[in-house]
Image 1 (cartoon, rainbow, N blue to C red):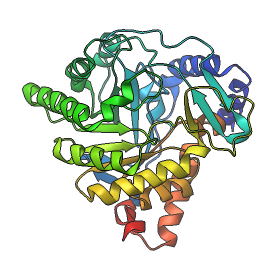
Image 2: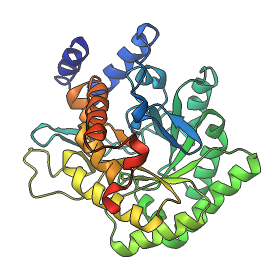
Image 3: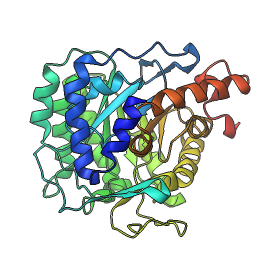
Length: 349
């Protein structure tokens, strides 16, 4: 109750100020937070060569610089993904660049990969005691003349600290970045990153984070390249540039990526379509509009082995994680599934 009350107070601040305050408070509180309770065994997932205590993860964007991953794990997340981080620090886009759409349970952001750079993240994580699953989401600098080289550099610098690396080619807030999803560009990019992994002789899984704003032909191309690209999975999906007619909030037409409840249906449709294309050969992480156990369960039934949340956390506070896990356990029991693994892709069978 206290945590939820604190979240309500933070929502009275402008969005970006609230986010900064949240990270600061979490950094101070981290040593005093109790460890997360042991999860229902039915929620455990084995994927990517890792054992996840539950399938509910924190999506990239919340903790761009890996300031509080262990604090977030203590709230009961099965894994935490930090970033997006770029090789060089960058300030991101001009403010204001983050907008709450409270009536729509949504957010629009055009942050632009604001972060302190990979060297700062590496220095912070070098002192971290490994515990809990940590993913690192890497991107390219806005002014880079060699964007594939930026991903190579990010992987090389940060893979030693990560349980998996997410290659983000789907942010709508870096001009031209989504062009890396095109067949030839994507093939070249994945070859560069996987070749760097081979050169380093490490086994860190690589996941590709894709956009929801793709047509069936583009989905075919992405699936084909991903299957041939020696990667282990995909994160489906990033934010959308679409603006559904149902949006009610005054800031609904701000430019940037829309996340939250309005993204749930389109992102889940892309997830289901991608699972149909890749079968069981890739691990899929479902993200977009998850705010309840029923939402997480729908992502799993559509083909996700793991699920991520972010926007709903801003509206409901950290106790949302426990509620989602409790509701998900009840739904698995209701439908006679022994565990999450048995429910993955159930709607495609």
